[in-house]
Structure formats: C-alpha cells, structure tokens
Length: 120
Image 1: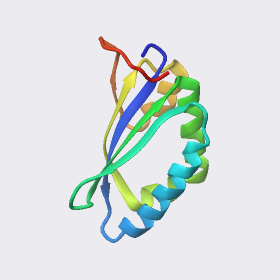
Image 2 (image 1 turned 60 degrees about the vertical axis):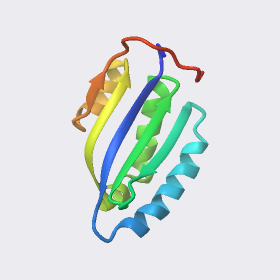
Image 3 (image 1 turned 180 degrees about the vertical axis):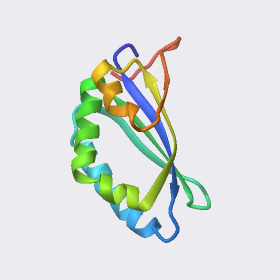
Image 4 (image 1 turned 30 degrees about the horizontal axis):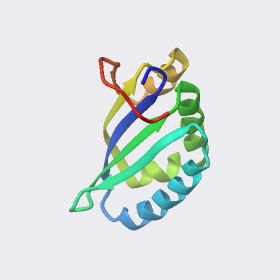
C-alpha cells in the first residue's frame, strides 16, 4: 500500500459516443495490459450506459507516470471526444512528479490512512 498509486475516474459518456468509446476502451485495455507496472485496470458502466468508472492501480508513481504519458500519446484525443471527466480521485502518496502531471486535471488526492493490499 505504501508505494501503490491508484484512482477512480468517473466519466459521463457524450451523446452518440458509446460505440466509439466501446472500441476505444477495448484498445486501451489491450494496450494497458502490456504495461508491467499496472496492477489493475478495470472499467465499469452504469445500467443506462451513461456513466463509466475506471479503477486503476499502479505499482508506484513511475508506473503511473508511464501510463499517463502513454495515454496522452495514444488515446487522449479520442478519449476526450467521447467522454467528460466528472470526478477523479487519486489514492496513495504520488511522487511530486506524479502530482505535477495530475494537478492540471483537477484531481482530488486521498492519502493512506490504514488498511492493507494483497496486490504486490
């Protein structure tokens, strides 16, 4: 739990964008699966298919930075054409470099307080 960085990002799917977003999601899941520092990358959708949550967990800040940089290069433009970010909560203690990268997105940070993780 000490080094891990994770988040939940909540998205509102734009009208008419679900099919494109579904294709993009499949591409992003396949691409992110190849990132060795990504411990978890799970997508959830509401019954009305208007809200999506992505739950992501990284082994450390460096792995998170690598993912965000890759996202920016490969998928960000198409992603933002399909959705609006409505909430982004980051869990853990991201490094100063990771915070600098995320601060522009209006994220909310929650630091470790207790508990454990069985993910390595």
